[in-house]
Amino acid sequence: MQTAKKIESQLSEFDIKKIRQDFPQVLQTKVHGKPLIYLDNAATTLKPKSVVEAIAKHYQFEASNIHRGVHFLSEHGTALCEQARERIQDFINADKSHEVIFTRGTTESINLVAQTYGRSFLKAGDEIIVSEMEHHSNIVPWQMLCAEVGCVLKVAPMNDAGELVFEEYKKLLNAKTKLVSMVYVSNALGTVNPIKEVIQAAKEFNAVVMVDGAQAVAHLPVDVQELDCDFFVFSAHKIFGPTGMGVLYGKEELLNKMPPWQGGGDMIDQVTFEKTTYNDLPHKFEAGTPHIAGIIGFAEAIKYVQGIGVTAIQKHEQMLLEYATDEISKIEGIRLIGTAKHKGAVLGFVMEGAHPSDIGTLIDMEGVAIRTGHHCAQPVMRHFGVSATARASFSLYNTKEDVNVFIAALKKIQKMF
Ligand code: PMP
Image 1 (cartoon, rainbow, N blue to C red):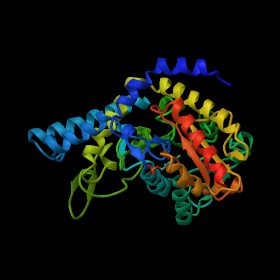
Image 2: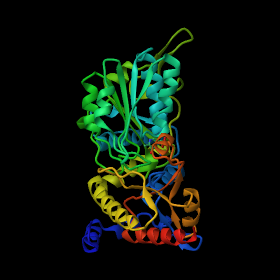
Image 3: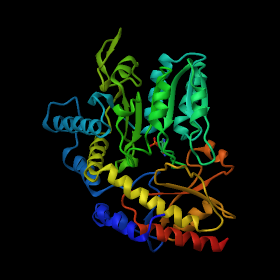
Image 4: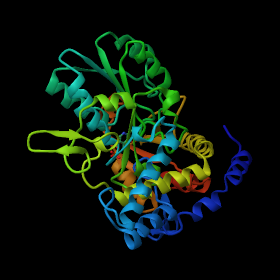
């Protein structure tokens, strides 16, 4: 347990005051007459001023379509989008910038891989492994693929702390395993999976590995080359960027082998009615006009995170998580859902006698935004024998005082039941 003094000193090192000024309007918002305490960061993060301004600047002064124009604004937009790609390459340490494909988000990235790599290289009887703690986005695309080509979905179990049972995962691996797709950090439980070991074990069977990094990139340092994953996917909106934007990172060799996904402008080389040839990476997978403002805002968000440093963010969030875990554990009648040894800044719980959605509604009246429901992870809920949980999730602008307000609100609510 951390002492209050230690917590305070870590906070000042982090300069939380300055960080909160980067989100000036929203962090001063009042909800039901109370100051907003935003603890729904696993759903989406707030956006710093610099990101909002970069997006507004594009629409106000620089709006144009990219790639196809020779005029100034078009060339400028094209350059910004390619610089954005390089920034993201740098952020996740991809070897080449064309290994970074822009998508609409994690969900689209996973579907892209399932529908291109999966359809082309998996066949009846091949096996795909996911874990029991996946988001629906990392379950359903594989089920759809299995229904189409006859491959089989295997599920690596978790224990009652919400940790992957590594030995059971290893037992599932065999010569038929062609693909492993696993979450790095669980959105419902906060569990940080031993993803490097997961990847290494899969590689012994030559399986291709995809990592769902939606809850990882904003909270811990990611190096795709060090991980040696084949695919890594995430969404901009969970890392201070705009919605409708995301990334599929893939190793060049694999991306080159994969057929294109959507057909249309930009993804082609030559089109005739007899035969069409396709563009090189990354454009092969980016049909149509991209979300240009989104790409620009995404790069600005990554720049913002790089300016603070993911390790510093991680340290701050871990301090908040520990403090919040200690405080909530003192409230009788609350059961934590997700007590893994290695956790990201997610605190899932249920309260005796109170439905999570009632907790969500009542705590909102106190100005505290949390999420309640199944968190798109119904198998996780099933494992713990609940239909829903309440979830507080922290980010770099949250403070110990936010946690105090949250805990006080929970105690108040508990008295109502
Ligand atoms: N995977 C995980 C672990 C997530 O937390 C989420 C979003 N909650 C997704 C996938 C899907 O992300 P998106 O809705 O941005 O595509």
